[in-house]
Every structure is written in structure tokens, then in C-alpha cells.
Length: 115
Ligand SMILES: [Zn+2]
Image (cartoon, rainbow, N blue to C red; front, side, top):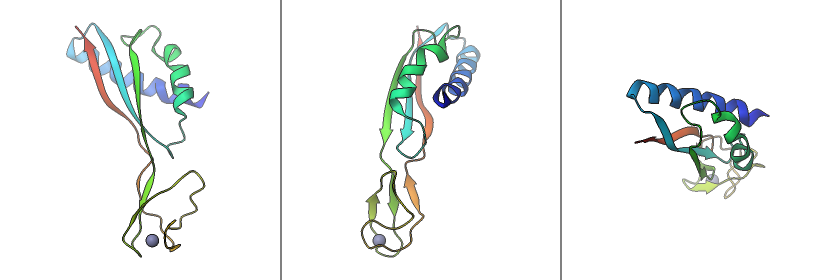
């Protein structure tokens, strides 16, 4: 599963940061996931317990903030939401538009240490 690999690198980073900070464990991790990031929130939730097993994040809660993808069109100046069928054209005026301003995020928003 591709999501498990993505989570493993997140877990490694947060685990390393927690160790450096001297935290005994991690309570909650927030992830920002764009709708065009290629990661599926449901699959992330499913793979989470496996990804955190045996680390400082074991038992931590996963919170996912889903980010809807959008483009900023240079031709009409508008910001438009796009879905997974987005074909590099502005949904409003149809001009070629590759200026994706949101939607590819896959990043840690926060990590709360267990006290
Ligand atoms: Zn446009």
C-alpha cells in the first residue's frame, strides 16, 4: 500500500523530532492532505496504526485536514476549484491553466507531544 510508505516517512520525521525534543510520546498528529496529492484519507487512516507501531507515535491520534485543489487562472484572474479530472484548463473560461495553488499538499500540520 502506497499510503503506508507515505506515512512511514511522516512517522520517521515526527519520531525523530520527538526524540530530539525529549518527548516521551506523541499524542496527536495533524496531516494536511491535498485532493491531488495522490494519498487517500481513508487509506491513510487505515494504515496509521501499522505505521506508528513500535514508535513514539504508537497510540497517537491522526487528524487529517483535507485540502481541496484549486487553480489561479492567469487569463480570467479567478481562483477555481478543480477535481481529479482537471485537465490543465481553467474550469471557468477554458484557457490553458497549470497554475495549481492548492491540492498537492502532503505535510505535517502539527504534532502534539504527550506530556
Ligand atoms: Zn480562467
